[in-house]
Image (cartoon, rainbow, N blue to C red; front, side):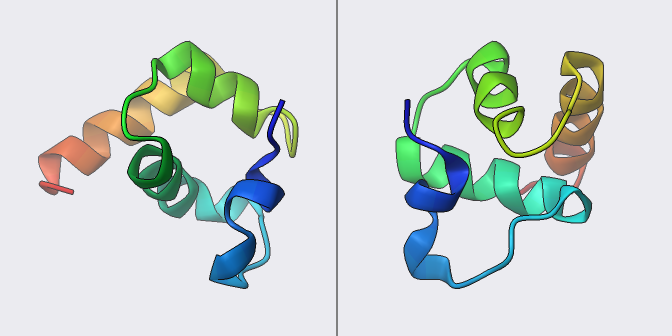
Length: 66
């Protein structure tokens, strides 16, 4: 399975939990179509993240039209 670090290698950014919105947006941009469970599985390879937290972040991003 591809890790987030490998996927976003060209971005030259340190992968940290504080950048969750940035990671979500970039993963969606790079891979186009993903389910929430797929995003969580990919994020959990780098740091622990729950499905509920992902849904909250996605709701926030949707409110901001991102």
